[in-house]
Amino acid sequence: MIGFGRVYRLVAAVFCLLIAAVTVFAASGARAEDRYPSRPITFVVPFAAGGPTDILARLIAQTIGPLLGQQVVVEDVTGAGGTIGATRVARADPDGYTMVMGNLGTHAASLGIYQSLPYDPRTDFEPVILVASTPMVLVTRKTLPVHSLDETIAYAKANKGKTTMGNAGIGSISHLTTLLFNHLTGADVVQVPYRGLSEATNDLLGGQIDLLFDQVVTATPHIVNGTENPIVVTIPQRAASIPNVPSANEAGLPSLQTVAWTALFVPKKTSAAIVTKINGAVQKAMADPLIAKRLAEIGADVPPPEQRSPEALRQLVKAEVERWVPLIKAAGIVGQ
Image 1 (cartoon, rainbow, N blue to C red):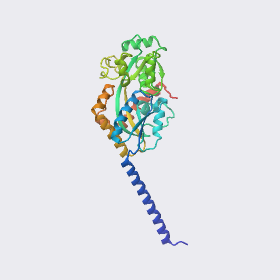
Image 2: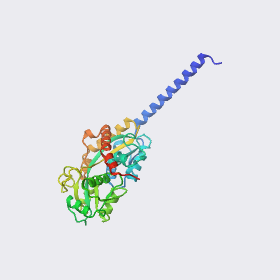
Image 3: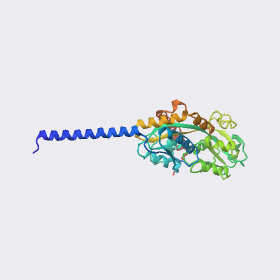
């Protein structure tokens, strides 16, 4: 038989080995965080290339890459209103090398649309930073015989069941804005979903659809070039990049208020040190006068400092879920 003293010494030895292993593991993890990033980082954009989220992601990626000392690669993963790309990041390793450029659709509305959503935007991500926000603008094909919001609503009602409005997919900000538009006006336009705003814009320019709620970021060049007719922006005041377009208040529909926001998220359990490092790099990028100028040119607003913390983004997601999910469920919108 093994004596009590020997058993005690064996247990003590095993315990010491366990403590040593945990200490080594913790130390190696800390060293990995200190070295972060040591390889390229991937920004997943859950919408089509050329759309507003893609444009913002590439602008931020090319700016923070040199600050972090690593390449930041943008990868477009489309489908299901952006939830395919978001799901991929939710399931990724929480090591700071895979993150998603999420928005109102992927990180709020999706909860009301998809009955078996593979992630919960409130709990399956660590919020990093709100990157930019931009209002929506209602634009029409050049040949549509309307020039004001009242005329647009009248046309849609006179052509009920025939007037088509594109969107970036079920649950996207353009889809939600159209849902709100129909609710407020009774226009009952026919929604035509695409895999991103860039695809919807191409069909609007080609005359295949009548209307589109586009983000000011991507609509501004077409409006300036005269290839789209702008009707109204979805904020109380006019947008600086398209100052000739009336606001929702001026157009007589003040409740038509939607703002598209873009933000960075990483998988749940990503360390606070990594979140802080990414947040700091993006903060520096946003402080660059050239970046601020570029964002202003495309109609994207830089959030004030108090809105750029991870906790502020967490609260934004919570508030947007509470605002939009009841409206979506009341409308009976169900994603495939």
